[in-house]
Amino acid sequence: MCGLVGYVNYKKDISKEKEIIIGMNKTIKQRGPDELGYYYNTNIMLGHRRLIVRDPNGGKQPMIAKYSFGEYVIVYNGQIYNTDELKENLDKENILLNSYSDTEILLKSFIAFGKDIVKQLNGIFAFAIWNTKKQELFMCRDHFGVKPFFYTQVNNNFIFASEIKALFAHPEVEKIIDNQGVSELFGIGPAHTLGTTVFKNIFELKPAHFAVYNKTGLHIERYWKLQSKEQNDNLAQTCEKVRYLLNDAITKQLVSDVPLCTFLSGGLDSSIISKFASDYCKSQNLPPLQTYSIDYVDNDKNFVKSDFQPNSDNYYINLMNDILYNEHHNIVIDTPELASYLEDAVIARDTPGMADIDSSLLLFCKNAKKEMTVSLTGECADEIFGGYPWFFREDALNSGTFPWSIALDERQKILNPEFSSKINLKEYIDFRYNESLSEVEILDSDSKETAEKRKISYLTLYWFMQTLLDRSDRMAMYSGFELRVPFCDYRLAQYVWNIPWEMKALKGREKGLLRYVCKDILPAEIVDRKKSPYPKTHNPTYAKKVKEMIIKVMNNKDAPINNLLNRQYILDIIKTDGKAFTRPWFGQLMTGPQLFAYLYQVNFWLEKYQPKIELR
Image 1 (cartoon, rainbow, N blue to C red):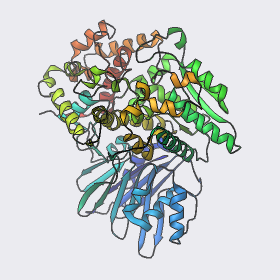
Image 2 (spheres, rainbow, N blue to C red):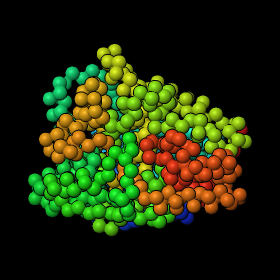
Image 3 (cartoon, rainbow, N blue to C red):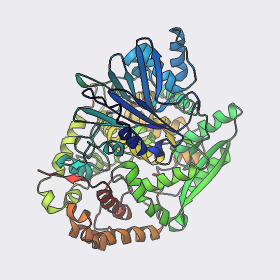
């Protein structure tokens, strides 16, 4: 896991502009605290930050492969999980390797097989390869966009990086927010439309796409997508295939030369990951699996049941600890820490995010990093297997919009009236919603329910899941920590995509099939446990703290938020402790305290990044 930066200019010699690439690389130092490296040439500059996970000596970057006809140079962020298969292909071509680094295997596979290699990769990755003979840059991003890749073009420069902040370290890149940016930020945010960002002319390479940049310009192509096709496996066959794919994905992702753990909440998803990983460690005579959970000071004392969070985690974590081959660690976070890291979470994301849902994960990773470097998580199971309430609630299914973001009127109202007259958030959201639905492939053989659930699944995979994957990458990598997501294995996602909804929601339950698949390996109480989201604090001192923080901001009439947003409306929300905002801002957890924290993040972001706001 690492970070990369670079830029290309065919019109001038940039090899002497070393201070620019060094400055860009410096902005992402958290992503790679172990090593840094550079490549300088007439028309290209590359920089890299490395978090060492595999082959400390053989995986240094930028990595160069020299041939009589020229050089290939790679900068790469990620982990390839099927290196054994790739290495076999290289062996057949008599291509020698100098290390067991997945960086070298990836680079030499590209040299041997060209762009077609992307269809053979299984992993989480974003990389760029420079071909000196063709004077051409090849770039690629993994199937679901677990690893980031941003770019912009300005004044004959093609500039790219793992994080947006690195682009802004180039002197010719401006921070501008236009109508679309405001619509993304307050209409869609903290989600975003794939390929875009909130900043004008700053783009991301979409998941499952590769790009070629050469003297003719930028050329982008999609290399993979979910395919709808009839699937006739019976229940027993389906369970066997799901179990195999899960075990294979988890086993492949346990490879590491540094300390590795799993995050264990006692929920179904993290328990499955931990059980498979624990069994693997035991079968290979490895030391016990290290497992980590997060909690908050006085959380049990203050826990209140809700439809979205029906029970706390500790009881279920203990159930799992009784059956795992593991050593468990509990990280407890206090309210002041959670609030103080809201600002770091913004810097990690480069935009306002999910408030303390972000800052708590950042703190979790920061604390786990003291002893670990890599963790497997249960992220993405709800998106793949249909685990969210909106898959089942008629009000959400019939909302005519993204079901995790139905507070459309409130989002419009929160804008400054001056800006609100220029921006119709509902119109923008409707456009993006319908644009996305038009991409869903429905089969004639699909039942009415399967067809409808394909639509909601597609939206969830390519909007909600992307937001959580962004969160996972930025919060973890800001801590120099790697998160892996076995449920996001594209082979598993493809297979489950075509399982009929009636089987996927076996017995009418969220993740019914996944529960059934794992009923013989987990305690019944875990299997039957109602979905509980990522744990958040219930300590009233947190709500009090963030309310004080946003009041202080609002009392400063020079605070930038008072120019962009509707000050009086926010003051009215504060007076009711957030109850005036009757629906979550986003997802299930961004209610009163999280909304205050989010608004605080918006103001901090405006102060820190100081974007020009250009509305028409």
